[in-house]
Each structure stands twice: as structure tokens, then as C-alpha cells.
Length: 287
Image (cartoon, rainbow, N blue to C red):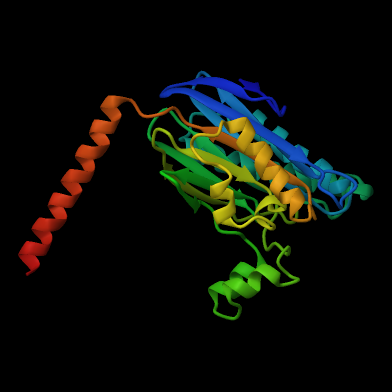
């Protein structure tokens, strides 16, 4: 297993071809320390790759310690055991939660520390997994569109869901940085894990709220067109967040999956044609 936490781009051989990976973190224009952490881990024996971004909470020292601890524990434990990928991912995040909580209890200077986390586990099959706690996000960029693969565990999102707050008002609400879940806060943490069907040519962006809190989704999509390479896309996103104020630490980790082969394109088109044909038959029968 290897990890590459630097900002330099990497080409990683994977089951479905070569991935282009780049990541970077920036302190922003306001904060004095950077409490974000990120890394990716290549599990060659399993033909899996784990991507992690964590955003620390709780004081300039505690947050920095918690986020790095989360990344380190995930990297150490994701390869343990014979369980399915989703189970191993859940166990590793739960272990990171316990590790952070224990460290805070032993050192008073770290009391109250915690961290958000978002993970993408690419597997050898078409079914991969996303897991998160807090408001760090995973985006999928596909065919010129952008979709959030996670929903923030935050107060304003809960208020929007309940109809108390509009989506527009949530962007400006002073409580928008209040998270409802984080690692290291309590013994048991609710971890959200979901399957993710990846496709050739997809791009996946993991980021802290230092990016998505200042740069709208449509702007993120505009800054990451297929023609721009992964490293340049990451740099452009961080620059955009800084130009928008840079109020928080900014971290971006992006993976570009191999472009589709002719055979995979044919399979995709055949699947679309089959689905369209089935829809026509259903409509004809219902009519």
C-alpha cells in the first residue's frame, strides 16, 4: 500500500486503466493554520484506491491533529480484514472516530477536537463506495454535468430539508458552518456509506467546505472541463475559492478515471438503446 499526500499529480495503474490524480490544500486568506488534511492510498493487492479529505474542528492545534489522525488511521486500517469494501470502509472510519476521541481525552490541549471526513473507495468492479461524516463533499463530474454524491450533515441542510429555510437563504445563513456530525465528538458516530457506480471518463472531486462554501456548483463544473488536466483543475478551484474570499482552508483532491474504450462506448450506447426500447414497450402497454 502506498500513499501520495503531495500536491504533485500522480498516474496510478488501476484495473480499468490509468488514473490521473492530483490534490492540493491551501490555508486561504483568513486562517493562520491549515486544519485540512488529505491523501490517497493504493491497495494494489485488492486493486482498490482510497481517497480521503478531512477538515479539522476545535482550535488551531486540535483540528489539525484530528484531521491528520483521521487520514492516517483510514490509510492504516482500510486494508485490514476480509470484509466487503463497504464494511472495511465503515470499520476504518469508526476506528478513526475512537482514536481521535481517545487522544482528546488523554491530552487537555486537544479537548474538543474533531474532524469531518469524506472518502471515495474505488474498487476493481464498477461498484465503488462513498462515505462521509460532516460537510466535506464528493462531487461527480460526468458528461459536462456536476452532481454532489454526498449531502452535508449540517444544521442548514437539515433546516432546508424540513422546509424551515430556503436553499438560497442557506447559502448566507450564519449557521452554515455548523456540522451535526463529526469524528472525535462522541463514542458512536453515524457514518453514511453508499454504493457508487463509476464510469470511464468520470471525474471525482473530494473537497472541504473551504471550496464549496464559496464556489457554487456550476462554477466548479465550469472550472473543470474535460479538456483541462487534473492538476490544472485543482489549482483553478483553489484559486477561485481564494478569489471569493478564502475565508477557510481549501482542499481539493481529484481523480480522473481512464477515458472509455471503443468497446465500453458501444456497451454504454447499447444499454441506453435497450433502456429506451423498454420504455417504449412499457408506454405502449400502458396506453
